[in-house]
Structures are given as structure tokens and as C-alpha cells.
Image (tube, rainbow, N blue to C red; front, side):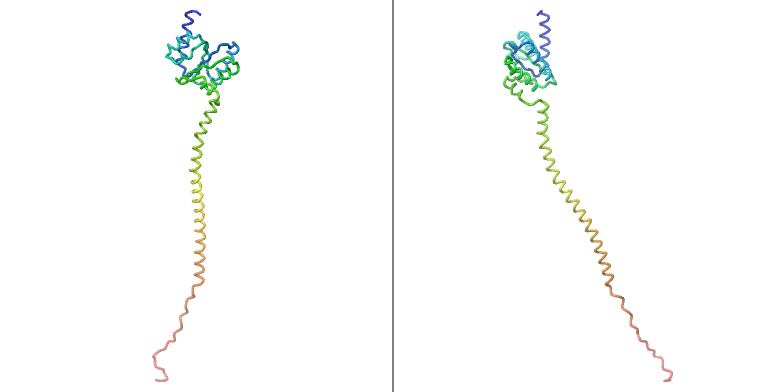
Length: 215
């Protein structure tokens, strides 16, 4: 490789290291070109770009990008999976783990996730998790379920209270109608039982005028 080509590779690799928060490193010794292409395709589906670069150039890029944590992982032929901003790190870890299991050649060394160094064991554990979409759904379900239960506990007494109020209103409305009927009936009874007006007794009148016969 010409010096100009090497400088270009280092520059491109430096830019990737600066822009990638998550990367996975593996030893690819023994893989065939077909196996490498298959792994590259799987990683692309998960939003990761797979690069095979000589360690001498990778070290130069890591030093230029300030990625000192990567230097400890560059022992022997190294391949790096750079996770894109919208990539799925769980799917990328699973792609590497599946390739290591199927080929029995690829060896996961470790990686850097969100600026933190992770071991090969942590990456393999990450590969056993459900896909990121399912994880988000599970997290959301765990958050929403208590809220839904709380709303149910709060709304149930309120619904019961509303039911009692409505029932009481209906009862009071019925009592008002019944009471009105009872009052009307009471008035009718009272009117029917009221004693008739007493007849005025005839008063016998007398006069003091002298009888003509007595005169």
C-alpha cells in the first residue's frame, strides 16, 4: 500500500473513531472471505460497518482520535464493527456472537460502548438480549402497567361514587313525586272529611206591640 493510501485510510479510520460511540472488536484470523462477507452483511443489517485494517494503521488512528481504550484491544489481526448513530448494538453483538459460534474461528475481544470499555463476556451477554424494539416495548410496558393500575384504583372509587350519587338523585326524585301525590291525597281526604257548615237556628221573634184585642 502506498504512503498516500495509508494516510487516507488512517484519516478515514480516525474520523470513524471520533464519530462512533460504540464499536466492537474481534479477531478474524482464520475466516474465509465468504465468511467475512456474510458477517459484514449481518452487521450492516444491524446498523454497523465492519472494517478490517492493519493494527499499525488502526493504532495511528486511535492515537489521533484520542481513543486510547482501543489500543489495549489491538492484539493480533483485528476487525472492528463501528455502530452507526441509528444502529442496534444488541443486533450487532448478536451478529458477532453468531459468527463466532458458527465459524468456531472468530473471537470477540471486547469493545467500547458509550465511551466505556466492555469485555468479550459482556458483549456475549448483550447478544442474548431481545431485539431493541422488544426491549423498548418491555420497558414501556413496565412503566405503563403501574400507571394503569393506579388509574384503575383511583377511577374505580370515583365511578362507584358517581353511581351512588346518580342512584340517590333518582331516589330523591322518586320521593319528591311520591311525596307530592301523598300531599295531594291528604288534601283530598281533608276536604272530604271537613264538617258541613252548621245551619243557623231559627230565632223566634216577638214584638212588644199591644194586641188590638187588649186595647
